[in-house]
Image 1: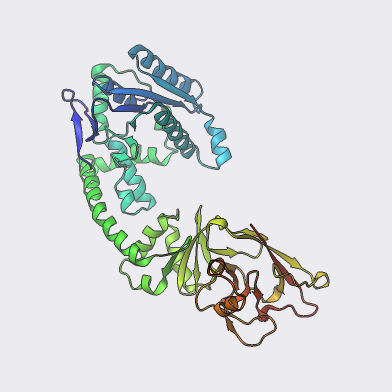
Image 2 (image 1 turned 120 degrees about the horizontal axis):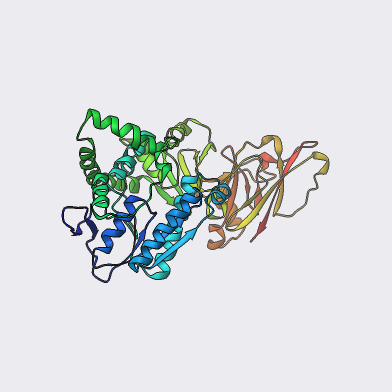
Length: 447
């Protein structure tokens, strides 16, 4: 953990503030009205520091939520502390964004805290996470499945957010509240075992303490060791990934041969994929892709990884931000950063051939999905329409008298490792439409 300045108050909990803190540093405290955050507010009040308070009423507990809000408001007024209160329709937010209530509440509160911090020019957002929260989080990550990052539990600082009570046992917080008669309210939802974290706190940790009486103190030391180990671990991972991942335009390539030669290759792949929002459970599925045919893919919320020949390729699901795009059979429109491509199935009787280079017909029965739309590269070749011999794409582009910038913007459409079309320039003879056969009309509209 980073070095920090300690403000002491007798033998009770201490505030551990950033080493760079000074008397003019301003803090925005996230206060729910519960014992942890109210004790934190009282500790800040006892010190010569500038702070304000932000409270979110999630409107999930009816009258209890209003009483929490009133407690925080009354305390701030009595103490002369500036405060901001947000009332949020958390259930509506969760429904609209298709997330759980817990995720909705977290997103709402941190968005609110950041808006106040930025507008009112506070230096830090302060939360009341303590030692027991950190241990609970570590166990939650461990049981769910995690990497080295998850084993670090809750960091002391994350950007503008700091947690000055992170090393303090909850028992000490309770002792302080009793000694100084700090007002607070209990949230009955913390006692409901329907939530995984509550089960860990109320059931699992007490059982572990019975077996290992010093369990909590030992786990705190373990977290410190994990945090130190993570620094060395990340340095090693970064070195390997730098030598393994190739960035090409907007996309990322992982050579399968090079990756398979690495030690701990599954861990390296996991560390790479988490950057693109893939989950730990998806890592094994991605590994299995190397035995699949080209074009097979797995998606995260934001990206897609697929096998293409001898590579794993990671590309954005926002097609206008990618240089290689998968086109499944049911997709009819794709936007790139150069043009829009449209695909439409056409019955044989409705085909109307033209000389328009921006639109072609290809044999529907010869296409293998997903199609791959990508930038042209060295070594590409096709069988130009009307010819029986193959020709390098580079030679086709020379014959077309394209300038260097124009060549750099050339895309090709690929089906099962075969080029179907140098987009807007030349179709491949192997996919020409035969008489009385259905086709797919592929057209482009330049941006």
